[in-house]
Image (tube, rainbow, N blue to C red; front, side):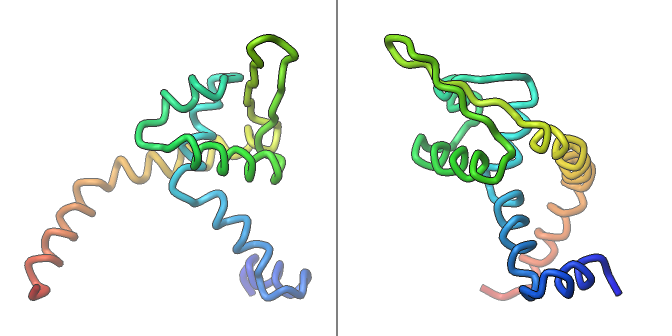
Amino acid sequence: MSEYQHTCMIRGDNGQTLRAILDQICNKWTLLIVVTLDQGAVRFTDLHQQIPGISQRMLTLTLRNLERDGLVSRTAYPEAPPRVEYALTPTGQSLIPPALALAGWAIEHVPGIEASREAYRARIPR
């Protein structure tokens, strides 16, 4: 029995909890945010500038979900203008090694994946 099957049996939720966590971690923006926050606490605007292509709305939603799940902390400073910083929690920091391993795997396999995609496109009529 796999660890996934064992976890599903113990929880009795048919894997819903695990799938929800993996959906959050594996979404388009989470790993980019987590890896960016590995440098230390970052203000929202700076974080937005460091992640090309993410909208302010998507950054806000993803940060809220990461805060809800305990991966990111949000600190608001009572200043004028208000200053808010985001940082990884210890749980968020524990995601860095697997995130870097996954990114390394992707970088290593880009040429082969691109070649496979091109071969697939050539085989499939449009």
